[in-house]
Image 1 (cartoon, rainbow, N blue to C red):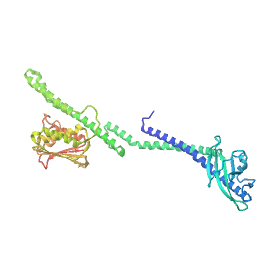
Image 2: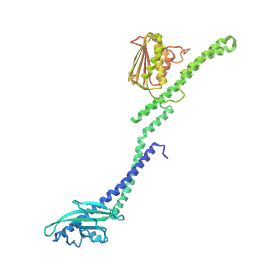
Image 3: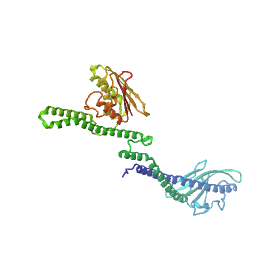
Image 4: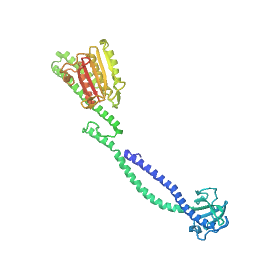
Length: 450
């Protein structure tokens, strides 16, 4: 069963890796250390045998006949129960073997010009390590003769030494492995702290203690933090919009209901008035439902190209206001991506460009400025929408940004559409400014978006 915790998953993976590593160390130890011990041991024995042979050859006149010392420098050569064997070859003929060799088969001579160490596994039941060494010696007549010295020993001696080392190695490796696992667990626990920090911050947002994820997160998590913040902002905008729509609906129905209440006393005398108010209430409900057009299903916030949205709205408005022959000056970059819901973007740009077309004489300018700075804050873009109309009367700008200040909110022009734009921009963390256009003389909207 796979654990749900990321820490435990990574920890168990580390355990498997360490187990495989230690197994490899043990196998390597068997292969490298045993052979290393055997080779070093045989080299020592070979040096002892070489001195004995040199002493015997220099005191003899014949190359293939000499008398080895009665007492070997390495006593194991003379012990018949010893597993250490020694052999001497001259002209590929065995001329001597140590008493310890007994009836055991001698290794085959090889044509070599330097020492050679190898494993002899020809006998499946008994592995032996063999060291060959060619040697040239002078006899008593000062004549050179070539010899091949061979020493061999079974694996028992090395295995005994290695078993002792293995025990020590297993103890040390066990302690080291446990220490490494503890360290790795602490490292993993520390490495996943930013994820736990995000979870804690999300809980704080859910409890209303925080607005957004604003902690110090690693670079690798900045993408998910940005998307989560965009999603949180999007949901907050959706909730606020629903609240405002309900407030607008209640406010808009307040007056018709009051009139209907007054007409109930004498319905026949006010039949036309009642029908008129019912029609008005129906119109108000349809309008508010149209405004509350946020989709029921959850959608994931993604990046949108605002330039594409502006071009689509521009094409649509050119057809709607064909009779006014409006000249559009649209100056946009090739691409400008922002995190925003598509409906919100159409609401912002569509409302303001539509108002510009309604109130202009013949000219509407639309442009985008990238990475502007406003009130000591950096934004992704600044959208300019200008027209050559009369503009907003002095002192009326702040009024059109407020909600619920008019008796009838269905008035076209600089009315409820601007207040909706203002609310959406604020909820997105942007800023809406308005004023007189210096180039066209009409209204100039400046929309800062994060």
